[in-house]
Amino acid sequence: MSPKILILGASGQIGSELTQRLRSIHGAENVIATDISYNNIELVNSGIFERVDAQDYTSVKICIEKHQINTIYLMAAMLSATGEKFPRKAWDLNMESLFHVLNLAKEGFIKKVFWPSSIAVFGPTTPKENTPQFTIMEPSTVYGITKQVGERWCEYYHKQYGVDIRSIRYPGIISWKTMPGGGTTDYAVEIYHKAIAEKKYECFLSEDTELPMMFMDDAIKATIDIMNANQEDIKIKSSYNLAAVSFTPKQIAKSIQKYIPEFTITYNPDFRQKIADSWPKSIDDSRAREDWNWSHSFSLDDITKEMLTNLKAKAKQSV
Ligand code: AKB
Image 1: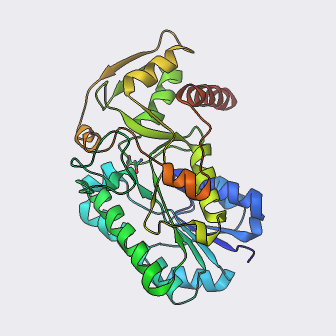
Image 2: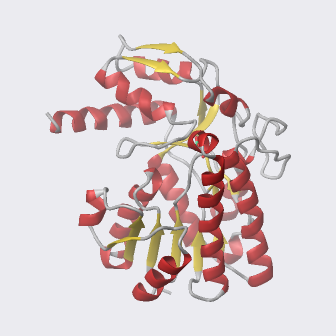
């Protein structure tokens, strides 16, 4: 099956880079980007872009039929921090979009689905170190609840209706091309921007808050690898644990100081501290490594080097 791909929520942090990568692999004409607005000019100019609200079943279906889509990446979601401000909206967006896609797959309109889960599925009662694939999951954020419920529905739709769905639990994602929006791990992107612009950063998490993180290139690779894997190798139909590095704000600051020695960090924890405290410090992703050969490439210092080099170059271009 040669993929004809639809990306819902293509303008977001992961969606925008995933779209460009998929376009370079499969050809721009085979990757249809959609979102609720046209404000990502690069995406609009680099291939077919349609205005589609992932919560609107009819417009998703029309778009699928129009472009003869067989593969969907559902990247539209409200993340943890914004979700706590708008709990009902987070529930509606995250669950309705998933149901639309699962039902369209069940009805035979789509052959393969990617749906991202998150480390937010875990909660305060989960073992924090090397969190196992199968463990206690009592998420305390609305975002985490939607991801955990979503995982259960994905597995159900696979078992009951044979839907080919693949999913990974993303950690915090770090990228120089796109800004994250509304997550608890966003500090790990903001810090690099501030390091270059102001040589200082006030962190909204405390210095020793350790969280699992990953460079965008590794996250995109994982997403494409799991979608390319043989269906029989995808043994977990809910969502796979995925890991690369784990670090604290203090450790990322130290890594930045290797390149910008005058960089300073201060700490002023806000409501996001409680969210971060409920999440794992590190993740056991051995099942992803065994089942579909996942491996990561970027260490914390590699990430720092990539972030600072590329953000500096970008800043020079815009002068
Ligand atoms: C968030 O912080 O909400 C996200 C996530 C870990 O899923 N980056």
